[in-house]
Image: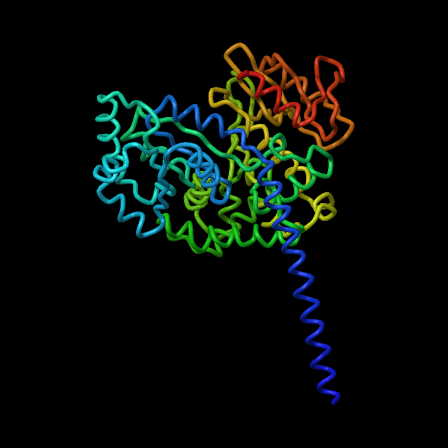
Amino acid sequence: MFCMYIMLYIYLIDIKYHIKYFYLYHAYLNKYFKFTCMIVRRLQNQLVNALHRSATVVLTGPRQVGKTTLAMQLAAQIPALYLDLEDEQDRIKVKEIKSFHQNNKDKLIILDEVQRVPELFASIRGIVDYERRSGHRNGLFLFLGSASLDLLRQSSESLAGRISYLELHPIDAIEFPVPTTDGLHQLWLRGGFPESLLAATDNISLAWRKDFIRSYLERDIPQLGPRIPAETLQRFWVMLAHLQGTTINHSQLARNLDLSSPTVQSYLDLLVDLLLVRRLQPWVSNEGKRLIKSPKVYVRDSGIAHALVNISDYNTLISHPIVGGSWEGFVIENIFSVLPYHIRSYYYRSQAGAELDLVLEISTKERWAIEIKRSGVPSVGKGFHIAAKDIKATRRYVVYAGQDSYSIGNGVIAISMAAMMQEILNLGA
């Protein structure tokens, strides 16, 4: 009898457990789809415009960032055909791409993960040239890819002058429809990948990001060719997260990993190409100045950086040693998400200590000096003013964690991250 009571008790606990997580999952789905419908990706209009002016368009971005969703939204509005080139059946369909296009020439052909079949580009060039002679000059192919430089190199060699390039970033502070301090903290903690950002709880978000990291290490990177031990690459990636916003020292990293400097360089190149790490180059144009010439590195998505170092919640984040570098990287990535391609970006640091977190070269006659502060009461030091003078800055900003914009003297404007992003968007308005 006692055993029966125990079994009944366990059974009731089990039911309670499943009911609890049923409602939790149900709440997650409601929240996820509600917010997904509310989030309008800024790149959507740019993608439509690019297809109107170009025969082929490449849309790059890391896995799970929303490229396929954006493409499918477009496909729902115009005649289009979507193929995933990771699927064997879809690869068979495009083996004879010319006849496939001929049978579907009235549709936009969307090819996902196109870097898996780089030999397609040469054949597509012939299709594009033929269609252009027939008067069909735009909207023929949309390529989606989760690698950057390799994909651009493959496509540009065959389709130079026939292609436009766009990059889809994770959801940023303007796109995220929760314009509150808590919403900004959620975006910073979890990053901008939709599944992570919109998860029902921080723990679910963290679990998704850890799965994302594992998938890249164990599946995606080996498929791209490099034979890199997953454990070694993960250690390297974790080191970069701890070094968020610092100048890279290949020799030191090589010693820590028991590797050669060229091997460490190749690991970094790979993560940069996969759009997972950003390398911010130094400003080195000042003759006669002794400047730091090593690039700074950032794990591009703040949520991925936090997952790599096991930061699970906001309270842990704000007390963690990487909090300053994490905030700096978060702001920089949000700024880059709205940055037009013609604007060049750098950081500035002299050996004497003058420093700018970000330099934006708008044109040969216009440069913005930007300092990034997590404080709600922004201020800048002497080194900022010296550096701004060195680069001949035409505007000086300090991006801080508050909401208001105002002058703090000496030509410096304190500005929120979202307002800074809007200032940049206004350049193309």
